[in-house]
Figure 1 (cartoon, one colour):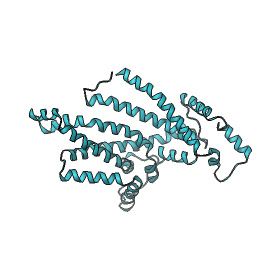
Figure 2 (cartoon, rainbow, N blue to C red; figure 1 turned 120 degrees about the vertical axis):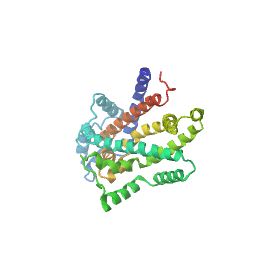
Figure 3 (spheres, helix red, strand yellow; figure 1 turned 60 degrees about the vertical axis):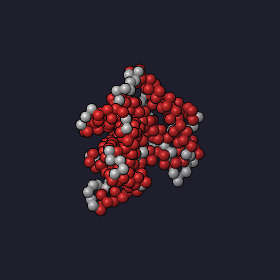
Figure 4 (cartoon, helix red, strand yellow; figure 1 turned 180 degrees about the horizontal axis):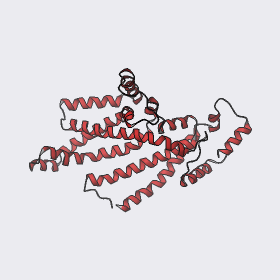
Length: 307
């Protein structure tokens, strides 16, 4: 197990280096960061040259990248073009998005598995059809539409929840944005659970358990559901990183100043240190989530062993 973890951690190094370099290329391909920094007030050539030198933009791209990575290895993600340390922006943004993502993952896992179990155990019946129709609607409606509609109905018209989220909001205020963020993932989790249950229902071990006269509850929870959850755990684990980075729309709807907000502002202003710094952390979280999913396999299926 230890060798497997070490091998996976070493594999993260080239992935992290390659992803950050690609982000570097894409950010600078958007245009001149100095022009975006000054906006409509075009600076004189001397001022523009001085700003480029101060921001390390007058060096070749590979030197800028090497300079950035040398700072990252020391735990310094540099300074944004607006003068704010990127680490300070991270300390303010990541806790907000982490709590939002936690609500979304819990909602996705609980609702998705419950609905998938209800549909999978009643295939072809009314409950199965209703669940499939609900998931189809969730997949078809874009997040900005479902978020805006739910915000208006629950937050403005009926006033059941707060329509916006304060910077230091308690976890309860994040229930609606978290549900909006995880709504599409619930549909995928539901359908994946239903399909996996259908495949394992015809397995030999399940027929053996029924022939032995085991109680239905034990058959479903201990045998059927446990083996069916392996692809679901894979999806939820990989979806964690996607939810962290994909919260841009949800955070904009509910005025949440988290990772999505900072990434949006960074891309809008061509702020390379901010964008690359946040994406670097998101890549690390995504890789660690994949490693955790890999290790969870052995808990769900004892036949899987990492050597």
